[in-house]
Length: 104
Image (tube, rainbow, N blue to C red; front, side):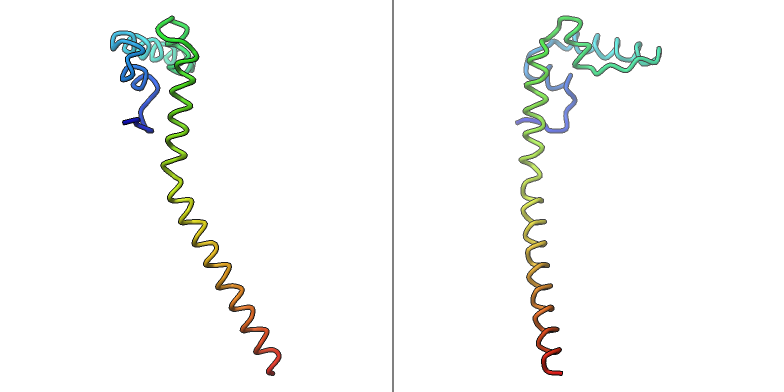
């Protein structure tokens, strides 16, 4: 199963695209760079080191983003339903107000 919260290095490792040793080296390099005030993404470091390709990183990032959007779809559907219900209630209240105004 695809883990939408996993870091890119972990995803590359779980998919067999890099070794655990390569992942550790990439994380280590990232830490050393950050101590020097440099901030590169782990995927960029792994590609630069030749451990994986940019296409592999991009593919997993795309899959991760797609999975996240699928995971939030039910919440968006519920939100849209609630908005429609609120709009219907507002319209009904407006109709009542119009009727009361006519009566009186």
